[in-house]
Length: 496
Image 1 (cartoon, rainbow, N blue to C red):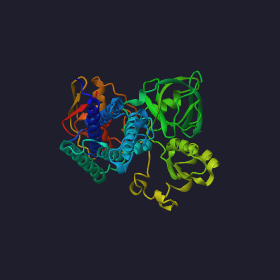
Image 2 (image 1 turned 30 degrees about the vertical axis):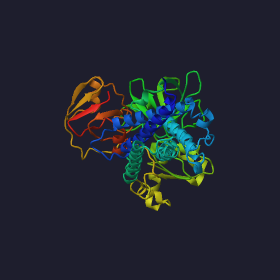
Image 3 (image 1 turned 135 degrees about the vertical axis):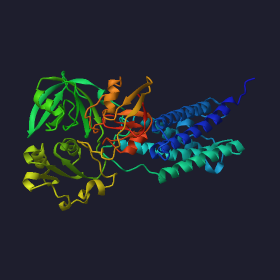
């Protein structure tokens, strides 16, 4: 005979399992972000397990809610399940509807965390992080919901399980406080970016206009051949030009984000160019067809009441778009430095538009580089060493030389998807070795700046020699940039 209480058993068991999965997922997330087990941990499988556990907790919450609805004894309606304080169920009279209401609220928090995690590549980092941090409150609130509304609280097995989960939650939160994520940053934060994303959204454009902007700098406008709208972007974004000779180069967008009809970039012909800027200056003409990918954004404008923008030379391109996107009431200033006013794109335009908000420093006019100590802004006092990481956001256009302390040796790399083993010589680039043996990785700058060649590390410890982001951040998400980086040990396993 079928047990009439079967759905009530499903409800109770699925609730406990969902609670356990949430606690373990949060704990794993803390291990992922703090790396307290370094160097024995492997961030790649930690990230996979964290995502799998959080997704599984959503499944069991769904089972919990569905069984409550199906169970005739509990008699929960859809309104009871989704509207706080709608249910009349009470286990502790003086608490009223709070225990069940907490369960409904926790459900919405859980769904919000999971949904934003699936869309984290498309959301501003600060919004995703704010919602993701609510998972700490979630596991605490679930504890109260379980204790105040559960029917098993007097059972010893339940009490032991609850004690273990609450203890694990407490230890995890204390660990998160005592071992915060490292603030050391080399360049723009790109945490969570997918590897080799510069081929995403590859599409054809037409060179609509080529305009000299300053000495050695060309402005280029791109439109779709049919003049339809291009994909939206926000200040700080860049596109990748796929040049006809096979080179790929990334350039910041510096036009109006509200104008979907065109992409605008500015390109400096560098005397040390490896071919990209030289090709743009001497070969791209109005009317030519070209392929571009993106836009992508690794240098987003953070929300603030006040800004101090600092740009050197061609670095003005993303800053210009940021400044022009700000409302008039926002307080900001710009220090724009360059060798000469004639070589500084948009210098006169910005001065005319914004007046004394813009400080132009041309070395040839001022007799040398700007004296940061003489400027009326405390943020300019030795920026990289004085300004806290939560206030300083920047993007590099050239690499930091990190080779002085590197001990370069030969090592072996295993391609996990084919189980192929490759020996990388002492004087050989890891990227070259991978591509010569079927790796097929895309690269752009070749100097460890752009992050295009990102690859996932499954086992081993990379020797990070790039300038994309902090070593701790790279290890936390389990990636490396093989154009310049190598291995600290004799073996490395990559997700290729």
